[in-house]
Image 1 (cartoon, rainbow, N blue to C red):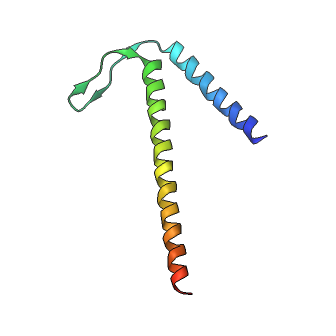
Image 2 (image 1 turned 135 degrees about the vertical axis):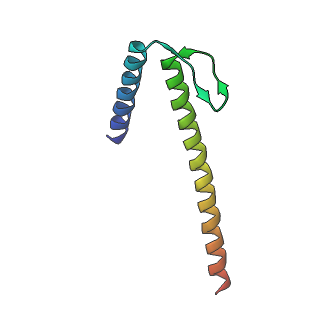
Image 3 (image 1 turned 90 degrees about the vertical axis):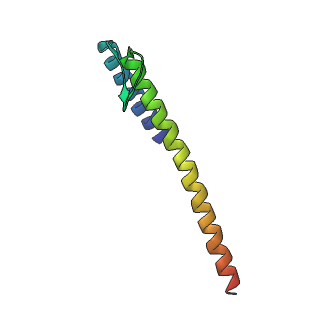
Length: 83
């Protein structure tokens, strides 16, 4: 049931992004400090932004889990020394 709900939420967001990008097909360019990108459709820029965000969150979760595992193993080793 939870998997179905997650799939429905993802399908809804995908449909909303598709409708938004079709209705706003104007070309935009991103400017950061002194750098300026080429003009791309808004849907492409939106898709790249979401993709980069998802990828960076996945990498951060991986590092967070690794640090938690190391912290738990250090606690376990400290508890062994007290025996």
